[in-house]
Amino acid sequence: MKVLIARMNHETNTFSPVPTPLSSFGNHGPDFGADAYRANKGAPTAMGAFIDLAEGWGAELVTPVSAMANPSGRVDAGAYDAICQSILEAASGCDALLLDLHGAMVVTDIDDGEGELLEQLRQRCLGVPIVVSLDLHGNVTEKMIVNADIVTGFKTYPHLDMYESGRLAGSIFQARREGRATPVTAWRRVPLMSHTLKSATASPAMKGAVDRAKALERRDDIYAVTVMAGFALSDIPAPCVSVIVVGKDHATAQEAADGLARSIWQQREGFIYQSAPLRDSIARAKAISNGADPGPTSGGTPSGPVLLLDHGDNCMSGGTCDTMDVLQEAFAQGLRGIAVGPICDPEAVETLYAAGRGATVTLSLGNKRAIPGRTATPMSLTGRVAALSNGEYTMSGPIYHGMTFCMGRTARLSVDGAEIVVTEQTQEGWDLGIFTCVGLDARRSDFILLKSRMYYQPVFLPLARGYVECDSGGVTSSDYGLFTYTKIKRPVYPFDRDAELGF
Image (cartoon, rainbow, N blue to C red; front, side, top):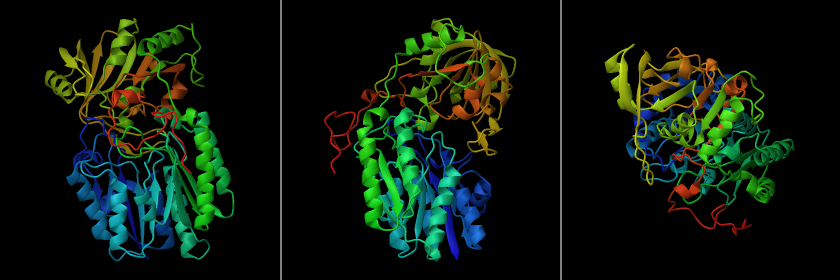
């Protein structure tokens, strides 16, 4: 058996000014051929699971590409074509196609990146099984479903089961191949634009939905059930919650999908997040630090730092990583001892590198990406260049454990009250490596400011005495009113409180 295995991952925030050229995929562009295999063999990705399964089957592997970019603006059409063509050209003559996709890719000239790829594969490879693993935040479309045979998705956010999703999809395919299963994929969309912070699998509404999905999977006639939270920061017709079910026949799968979708709709208010004013969030962080407010239960270290979580400028939702609102408000309220990272400002990195380690510099930092509807000026700071590095580190936590990431050239600026990590590329605040690569032990800080919504949890939450969610008003804000949607199909909740489920 000859099996194609490929990865194409991008969560597109159409409101983000951060470009997505081909070079954004991977540390230095996508991995092709043997490099794609090496990048995922033993990795905790769906592609890694596909590789392990296929090798166990004794199959011949074809790995044309592995391309993953941090969330950002629309994918450049040339980049999309290069990635897709590598997959399409390698698909000929294969007996199965196993694809690690995201589900929320928007291209400069295409609103449904994954659906377009799957449709072209189906036309080119008639009768060849197409097996897909999706991110929990995929905006699923009919084109995706009708052009794939088996579709599964993650059940955790933060995403800790990427490998498991791929393994489940591949195992269902193998059962079909051996005549032990007759999988059919059904789907139901809910007219609900959920907030990312409410798609965490510890959030009550989402947890309840995932628990019901797991209960359905215990049935003999259901092979896989996925609750797709969707990604609402994408101006496409339906950036909505949906349910995917793989069952023994269409009637069985559709009935299960419809039932789960109805229960999600009944709990729709639980998928909506309300941000507190930034000044109130910082005041609460200060109170947690001095013991006046116990804060949210973190289960962390009583003497540890307080986390300032700037979810309005989150890299993994397409943020610019350069809004300075949270740091400015923290300084205004007298907070000191803050580890900040990372701030993406290539211009500032150039200045810091030119000055050299140990030099004292005055520079303008952040607020340099033009965000529609927002006016902000860079923050003027004077400090010492404490360290310089290539920005590479190896993940120590469970998310992408052991994989190497690169932030581009990176500098540490030491100013009165804060140690600031400044990078050439956006980066999620998910591992101590973002600080240790420039010699900073963030655990000794009073506060840690992270451009993070959820991925901070496995590594940073156990180190913290508490945390506060801060909405900076960037392009990943939970305030949908900041964004101009022109393509969404109305009515949809929460824009339209009188929206109906429709089935």
